[in-house]
Image (cartoon, rainbow, N blue to C red; front, side, top):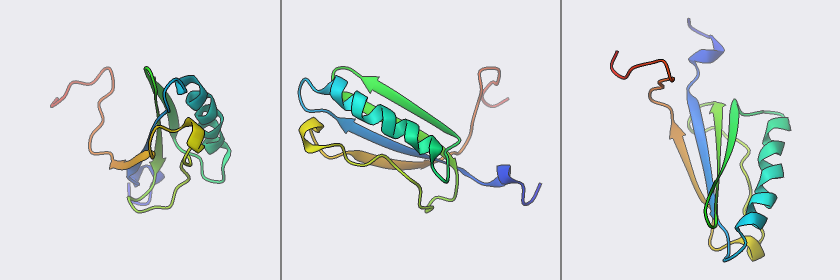
Length: 106
């Protein structure tokens, strides 16, 4: 259906940070309220998910109905004392989705 909001592509923003040694819990504690705050902004994502990979990585994924070059809110760089390196950021455009009841190619 043309013009339907669901015709817009889904864009996924990935934010991945590595904490300084022994600071993984602190980085997660810093990222959690900032990821939650994305939902209360003027433009809220369809979904926000926060991940932790031991011992020191934190990952935030947000899904948006938006074009690839759209300006969207993202988590900022964490404070230097929490960071082991600069944040990595990527944008992904959804190509295909299968849910738990779907079979690929079917």
